[in-house]
Length: 262
Image (tube, rainbow, N blue to C red; front, side, top):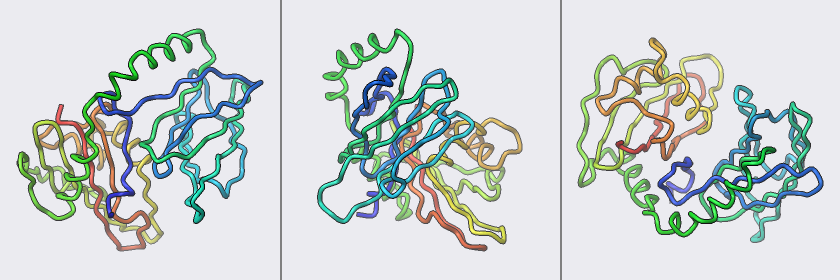
């Protein structure tokens, strides 16, 4: 199915969670990760400096501004997917071994902490597990909305919002927005007008949305902020689908974004 590649972002009311674990240099921490999506790994109050492991087992993207990394397993032909062994070192001098087990699940962030609040957060996460499991699942709604955006139609319960001419900025142009009671669907047109190859990634686009959306004169941000549906906030973004991630000079593609309406 064409929608399998889209990346789901961690939002509070979706049946996803943030995995919190205490740093333990004497033990390898084992956690499940998504087979398809990017898993964010962060050390609270610190910055990841180096990542050591078998690079053939995973794809790694780094966020140097925040000192965190995003990892996705490399697709394997065999049915069994083996665990990924990593070792992280941080600027504060911590070293942590990880054993990441690929699973067929939505991405979850892994937060490593060295303070005394970890135990309480894990206990709270456990107490809320039943509530999270019974929370409404939006994956089918998200897939249906992205498919509608790709096909250029308006699904039942949605209306097309007017697009101001001020949103048509290069290289990211907001060309369409659909709004429903709970979800918004936005289509951006990205054109590579440089002489070099242009590579897109979901995590970088998400970071641009979060950091630059309110900066005047910034192409991607001002396009988002100018939409009739209001600015995108970090706690409303749900999914991003990039039609084509590598653009040659002069080539363009569409990016589909799904967010909460409120």
